[in-house]
Length: 524
Image: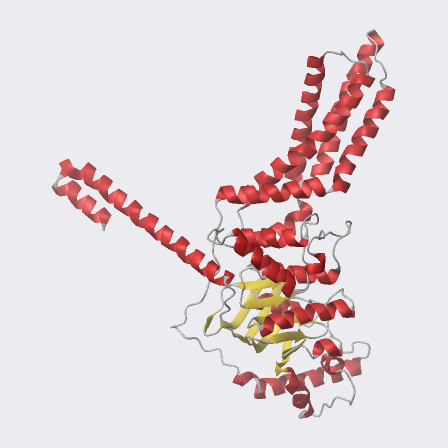
């Protein structure tokens, strides 16, 4: 409208074209600013509602869900075949099936974690309540092998997640209370101040790591929770603790979906609903108390005293050791699948309601650019300062190589032979500094890649503040080895004793160390 007024003015009253054009442009800019402010306020209101702990019940339903993937070796592979089921609020749903049945694929499709590409084809209906589920629907997704920053404590990990994903309107006291509530709710109080650790650094146990991954995803209280193989790699006690934590979340009103292979009896009894999968097909989806009676109607009776999970696993698995036995298993699975499609699947309604408006994730970070930089720089400083193994791996080679080359180039003379030796000495200094700096920085980004990718997928921060904060935090660790190396080697070689020349020598090594470290960061 403002553009039309400006154009008409330019034709009818050309002498007023400039001031009217400026006024119209200012009006448009003001409207755009108001719109942006309203959107930001709305996003903070959504996030603030999540902080309050209010859970909007969500029923997840899927109908005739198929997933095909193209591979180089096998071509097009049909991973999921017309799967139908539902997950209800306040219920803990277990996706159970043998290895290779499609459990992880189904939970990834339900959680919108399948990368969009020409190699992946997904068809079918997937709804939340009465609207189509989208990629940006608020949810928590816990992968099978979660990664964390090894030198942060459990409490610091959750504090960072709360600061990154909650709006600035949430006070520090509210964030702290939310973190402490999650620590208590998920049984992390005993290890709250312990470092998370990794494969090479001692830290929390596998069960505590699983519960920490659930807690970090619970920042913002999402109604939908997806957990892939929460008990894999855990002993029976830790596995039971993790599933019990999921059961508590379900009782609070969350819709919890997890995949599991073959649980023990005590864990099986914690589930409210069960979805059986085999060969990419849904064989049952409903209350866990109804599954045995449903199988009984098909002539498949569970022996008295048998763990139901073991019986069901036997019924839906295929024995590939014998062709005749394999054919018999496939016939049984086909019988179970057909019975489900005829009796239970038609009762799952996925009709859409146009009046429903879906909730969405905040599409960009809630923090300002400088707040992101400050937060990420602080985390990187802690990681660098506490990583003693890596720091010692930088310093010890610098000291030993300086002593070794100091003995080789001990007290260089000023004759013709000494001049040649000085050239070799300078080459050794340059080569050693470059290699030590580059090899260390090559390993800076790879361990953090999965963590950063997951955090950025949640729109926690932009990549530029992360890179800048990481590079600045790494500077002291990059500069220390060449400075230590030069400080030891210079006097041993008997070079000029003036402070100015010694400072220039160290400056050259420092600049070379930073340049080599930058190359290592770029390659890594």
